[in-house]
Length: 167
Image (cartoon, rainbow, N blue to C red; front, side):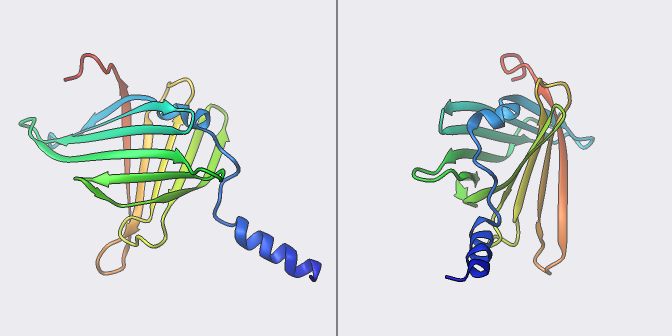
């Protein structure tokens, strides 16, 4: 095989995949996070380590009267037989995934993990960014396209909370 073709194919198959990552690289997610908007909507997100190959998260959005508006469950797991980490969100019981980790970066104490699913145009990317130790808010950014094909991005800053006293 021509060496140039070999390296082109190698680059094609490696594109879009983060270097081998472990659940330890995502330790910045662990804990309880929350924020209340000016209109009274409350978003909380809790992450825990399942085992060496998985993490689980749950999110609850409530209104000013403390009534549930939306629930979400998240799973990050290492795919057996590969080094890929997959993120699968379930919104109100419906799977939106899987999303593949395409970036894992570190800048000082800040770590950023990007999960993408180009087939899901409405919600094509989840980005989580936090610090170890937890000294700053957890940043979450959602990107996609609306029904008219216009790109959008939502960004949330969640503060660390005491898991035992907030409800």
